[in-house]
Structures are given as structure tokens and as C-alpha cells.
Image (cartoon, rainbow, N blue to C red; front, side, top):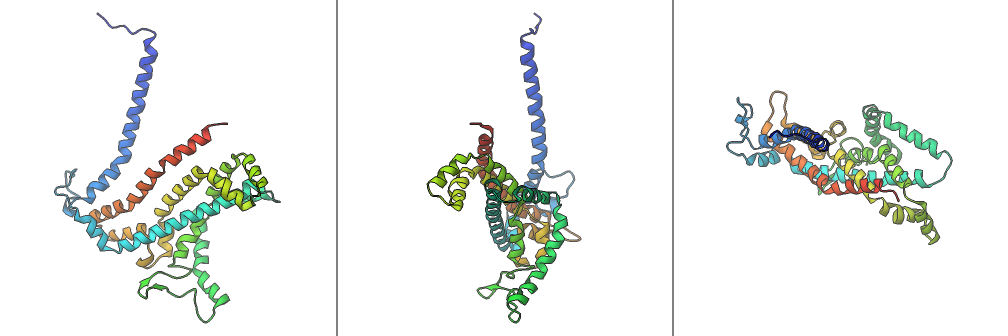
Length: 315
């Protein structure tokens, strides 16, 4: 008995075939994107002699768990981890604070030239970071001498090397080779201000008016009304800033010279020399570097979903 597809069943079959093709394409793209991460993990557990064998070794034999311990002790990895955590948290908190304050001013305050100033602020987003990096570097390098000349010409307080407990080098107060250079330039973002301003403008002004009637100050409106209602947007900006600051490479590379103040992306390149590369230790160090990023992204996924729901539901 021959099978004959009815006209009613043809649309159903077409939808199923289309869905199967889409899922197949997405699966292939997912495998393609996940393969480099898989190869990084496998290489981290290999013996160095088995990295470039023909045919490739798809499964480590034996598993070299001590590669992680070697990567941790070969360079001051623990200090770099602390540096990265401190710098990333400071940059994230600072950028969320400054961007939210600026966005509140542009969204809620009335002052002459507000819109023109906002347009000029947005225009800075069109300037590549590599263009502004040179003047910021020059200003950062000259800042200690300028501050010493203004406040303490004889003591040289701002250009002096600082040590914690007499032995742990913690950089300078300002200038190159300092936490100031790693943190302060990244605490301001035109993109973060633009994103939060658009979100703040979607909040009804009735909440603000009710708070002002109850005697709330201008900063109280920002802190007690706008911030609680904008937690999804603030969390989204915080996650983006955290990921960008944790992975930052070029700026820390040109402002840090001593290993004591280097961050993880800069220190990891120590495993790659001019004539040879310790691939197993490099991959092991990269896994240790990636773990916090994965945890932050997994934990922050619900804020992305919540932000999409808030933006998609119209009252």
C-alpha cells in the first residue's frame, strides 16, 4: 500500500524538516565553537611530549594532573589571581556607579545643554580605544611628577614605590606600575551610561514623584527608587564589565612592568617564549583563568533573561 501525504500533513512535515535543519545547523555551530575549549582542556592534561604527535592524541594517556600545580608554581600565579580579582571588582563596581549616576543625570535632571552634552558623550564611543590609549598612557606616566610638583616636591610621595608589610610590592600610588593605572581608566564607560539612561527613561516618573512627595531627596530618589528598579540592567552592565576587565590584555600590558602588579592575561604569556612554548602549562593556566568567567556568566544568566522579560512586557 503506497503512502500518500495529504495536503493537511504537508505543512506539518515542512515545519518538522525546517526545525530539524535549524537544530542541525545550531548543533554544528555549537560543536564548532566548543571544540577549541575541548582541545584546551585535553591539552592541559597531556604529557608535553604528546602535544604534537601524528596522529593527534584525542585522549590523554596518562592524565597529567600535575600540570596545574606546575603552572601555578612556575610563575607568581596566586599574586596575579589576587591582582585580577581586585582590579576587576574595582573596575566593575566603579563603572556601574559612575555610569548609573551619569545616566540618572541625563535621564532625570533638567539642565542647559543636557542633550547636546549627551550627544557629545556618545560621540566618544566612535573613537577607537587604540587612539585614546596613547594620550591616556602619557598622562598616566606623567601624573606622579605632576602631583609631586604640586603637593610634595621634596618627599616624592606619588612616585615612590609602595610595599605592604615591608616586603610585598604593591606598586605606586599613581602612574605606571600601579593599581591606579589598572583601575581608574576603566571605571568610566559611555556605553554603560547610554544603556542605563535608556533603561532609566523607561521607568515611570510616578515613582519618582511619589518619593519626592514623601520627602525623598534627589540622591534618595536615585538610591531608593531608580537603583532597586534597575537591578537587571545594573547586573547586566556589571557582568559585561566584569568579563571585559578580567580579559583585558593590551592596557595592562603597556602599564605594568613588574610581575607583582601584573594580571592573569599578562602573566600567562610567560609560558610562551620566543623559541618555545610550554603548551600544557599554558593550557592549564588558561583553564584556571577561564573558570571565574564561566561561573560569573552561569550565575548571571538569569539577569539577562529577567532584563529581556522586563523590556518585552508592556504595561
